[in-house]
Length: 312
Image 1 (cartoon, rainbow, N blue to C red):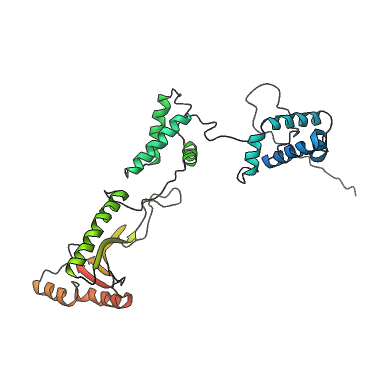
Image 2: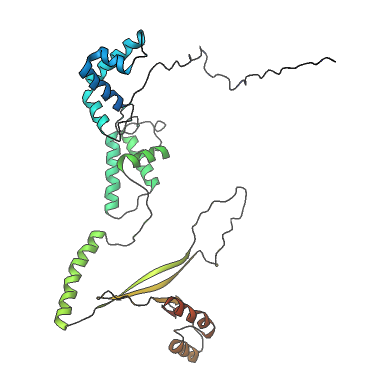
């Protein structure tokens, strides 16, 4: 019985056809060795100590012929940039770099225009005005037109925006304070208010000063967007019926540092019977009998006081 061996030959995939006619690009030979600034500085120090021949024998023993001549020419170029190489090699952040690129290099929008845009952003934030990426894009496109740049050459893309933030040390942040007054206005108000309170305490021989701060607390606040599978027409989000619910909280303390129980005010419906309304206000903090059965255990558990108000 004859055994027949069949050897399959794997064909090389054809791939995409070439779009430009002409000879193919020659393969890379990897003859150029890139060295870090730390290595270049060590070579220059050796060159000062033992000369060219000794340095080539110490650091490049495998180079010969034309490659050795090229290395010798590179070393002469390094001696001309001795100050730059020394500064980069002594800096831990740049000692491992192979080359040096200044900020803003290879950007379409001129450096002066970007600095003007960054100054505009700082002035807007000083006034407390929020700056969005869309605002940056519109301003950048207007500056590109003023600089005579073709609209097809510069589009203020997202990658440019990321580089712009990195060059001028900007970042996208969520708001942490809302109000009409700036931080400086608050400091000036505090400087004026504190001496006046101290004077009132001295004039009236007051021992303890009480303070109550009213603020809002969001106990259910759902985002407006979410990740979801493609193709679904309805995006369902589980909640208690509202995407945003809040309560009013009173935080109280005194001048001795003592903190008092939290004071919460929730919105509740008032009864249409006046007698029931008076009973709820005097006995159950404004809540009805049914709701009070749930509110009273919460007060005892968390050590706070909860009140109901239809107009909160």
